[in-house]
Image 1 (spheres, rainbow, N blue to C red):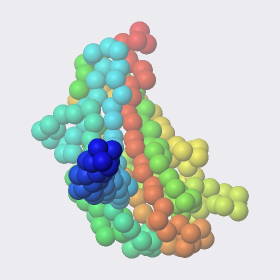
Image 2 (tube, rainbow, N blue to C red):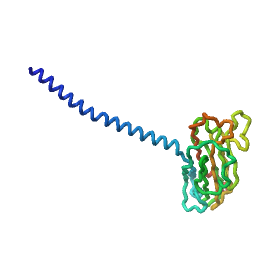
Image 3 (spheres, rainbow, N blue to C red):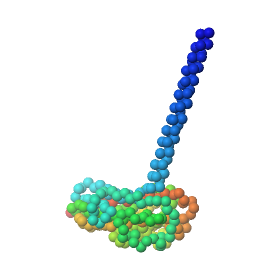
Image 4 (cartoon, rainbow, N blue to C red):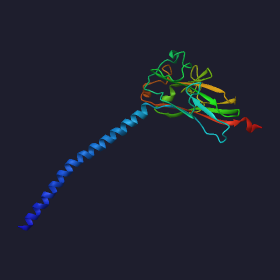
Length: 237
């Protein structure tokens, strides 16, 4: 008889434990699901709202200094500009882009293109040569095959595109990317203290490109740009 009572007591304890777990487990599952949803949302936002970043790379000597600004007045000086100039876009004819792309400061993207205008200034005490590099930071689904990047420097523009897929050379009306990941790279020489270079970067998906096909849907393309002093006038003497 004692053994039977003992068995009944253990069974009752197990029932109570089961009831507790029955309440706790759904709550734990709910918390985990919520965390997964938050992680997913963050991932989606990061994917859809990528930015165009311009960075001045550090140089050892303090007398050689570059600074960046969204405006030519340089109300705020910084070594890094971050434009949220990216959205979901569809292909367009580059010939339909606005004519004033180089006349608006800061971010001025349209429905199906990204555009950003900024300025680089010699804030140091010596004349320098600096190098800019415009490069691909991320690309998926071969979207770079149909992307166009127009770079304005002090009002003069060049439109860049990847080499034609058939190997025939540059796409019509464009200059080829310097490498698979570097779009453009060049040196700005004799950049004296107080000198300013104006840049505008425009990005779009060219609908007239033979590679602008359905498999590009969902692709991502992000570019960044760096500025770095490579030579100072004082070093040459």
